[in-house]
Length: 372
Image (cartoon, rainbow, N blue to C red; front, side, top):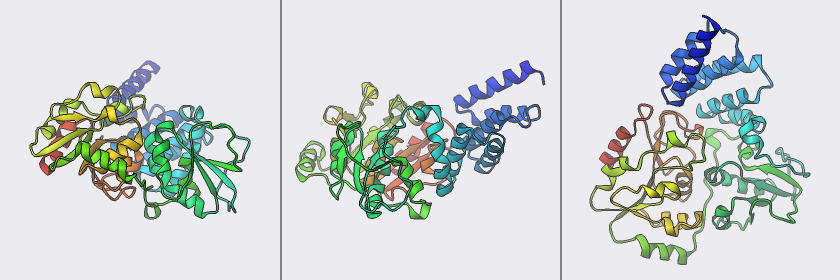
C-alpha cells in the first residue's frame, strides 16, 4: 500500500468514526494494520474504534500494545482507561484515568495549588479541598464520595460551579461549599473530585450510594403548585451542553419526541435549558424560565413522576434524588453506563434505553412509547 493510499484510508476511517459508522471505520483501520503493524497511533485508533463498536476485549488488546510501544503517551493511557471503565473494571480503569491530566483537553482544568495532592493517606482531621472538574453531571455523580472522605478523617470543603452551589448546600452533613477560586480559602490537602473513586479503590460492587439532597419543603411546595394537576407528570430533556465534544451523538432532535408527547393523560414538562429550548415539541410545556440553577431543577424533579432524558446532568440529578429515570443512550455511550445493561450500579432508579444501531433514535423512542 502506497503512502498516498495509507493516508486516504486513514482519513476515511477518521471520517467514518466521526459519523458513528463504527463498523466501516474499523474495516478501514484493520486494512491498514498489515502496512503499519507496530504503529502506536494506528493501534490506539483501532482500540478506540473497537471500544465504540462494543468489542472491549479487542479494544484492550490494541490499547495495551500501543501502551507498550509508547508507555508515556497520556492519550493512549486515557483511552485504555475508558475501555476498562466501560468494561466495569473500575479499579484498573480509574488508575489509568489519572493520566487524564496530561491529555490536552484536561490539562487546562488542572488546578495548581501549593498544598499537596491527597493520595489516600489517613487525613487525621486535616482540611481537604475537593474540587469539581469537567461538567455539572460529573460533580453530581461523584459528590457521593464526600461522606467517605469525611469518614476517612477529612474536614471537607467542596468546590463546585456557581449553578451547583445551592444544590450542594442541601447535602446532609453540612459540608462547606464554595464556588470556583474562592478567596482566602484555607486547607491542608486537595483532590479533584473524579480522582476519589481511585483513592477508594472503587469496584462495581463497592460504588457508594448517590449523594442526597434535602430540598426545603417550601421550595417543594412551590413546585407542586406549578406542575401537579392530578395527572401523571413527566419531565423531558433531549439535548446536553453543546460545548461537550460529543454532544451531537448523545442528543436527539426534539421532533423525535412527538410519539411520546402526543400520548394523552400525561402532563409533559420540559426541563431543557439553553439553546435547545428554541425547538420545543408540541405537547411539552417549558419550565426553563424557572430553572435558574440545579437546585430549582432538583425541586422540579422532586414533583414529577418520571424523567425521560438523554445523557445529561439531569439524569444524574434525578438518579441522585431516587426519581425513576428512563435514560436514552447513544449506541457508543459514555463509560459510566457500562455496556449491554438496562440498569446501572450508579443509580438504582435509572432504566436505560440504548440505541440498537448507531444514530437510530426512532427505535429507542418507539420502545419508550410502548412502555408508557
